[in-house]
Image (cartoon, rainbow, N blue to C red; front, side, top):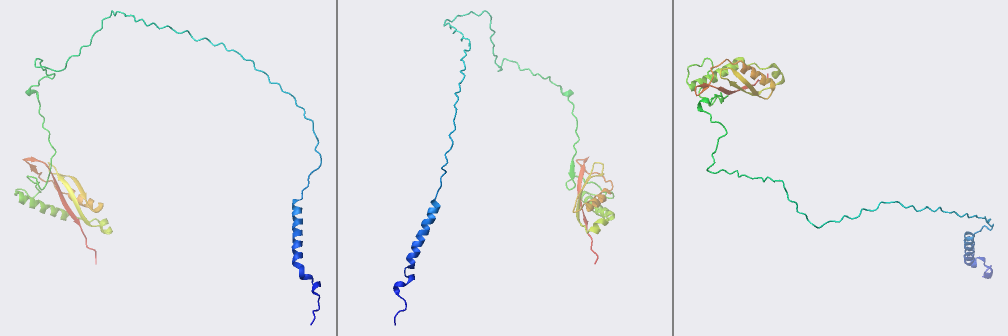
Length: 244
């Protein structure tokens, strides 16, 4: 079977070559358009420039009349000895050391023994209750021995606390309780002074101090036959039972 077309007449046979040639031509035209430049050919006018010469004024040189330095003073190398007429008093340093020949004088006058006055100063002695020689006597404990008087003192003290004890209502409402230690002093006249307390709450401390403040006057304690201050401490317990 014969071909219907002539192979020599085929148009698409050299299409790639034509495409490359056309592409190169387009690139050449594009490069030429980018590199194309124009220049202004109009001639610029030539102006006339006039130069004027400037003259600088010369400043005259002035001379200042400065005084000349003084001439040098001639120094004489000859030493002239001048005799001194005034007498110079020499300072004599005396020795402060004493010898056996020097008498030692007492600058203070000797005071006679009869002129010395001795003043007796009373000492403010405070003796604890546990070591006092003669303990204070509670009213109702007179005429007993030391041990019996001490036991009677403790008994009377407990009776006084029980008879005057009153639980503060504010402490009951707040549920306050605890131990309060009260310290006080029985002075030389047998009065209660210097009351101090230490406890869990101030309300309880005030009540404990009130009880101790109501203590009666006692016979003061004595040390070496002389009345002295005696310190004493007593604990007061504040306890209550809650209602069931």
